[in-house]
Length: 191
Image (cartoon, one colour):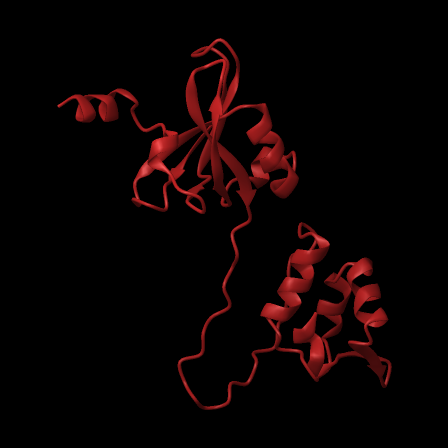
């Protein structure tokens, strides 16, 4: 009875005893709450990976700083990504354990082919939105959607790739110009 009461009393807020390293909470909604407690917190609502249930996390400054390191300061870009549990810590002043969170970008998986027949890539007619991606995310996009390996990169795609990524591809000799058009080397997977 007591354990059930404590679970209900905490509401949807996750506690340190509820989580283990690697658990995630999707970031579906977030807002600042400066009225409930004596200090302001960022409140994140989403789906908890361990249970599949809607749960809530309360982030203080140190957790927010770790999330910013991965997801950036624009909170609108947090939506659709995750918080990841990286541990718990005892808070001496509060006399309780807290959850240590960091941001985690959601990885978009490329579709998995279910046939053994060769797959012919569908030409992209629109440039992907690579503007919002970091350098490393752009490289990951190129590796994940490796439809251009060993072939010409459509000009619309080439123009969408940031200059720093083009420079790295050139430095590593993974891109070359043939007949004035960019070609991606087959070893791009080794990036």
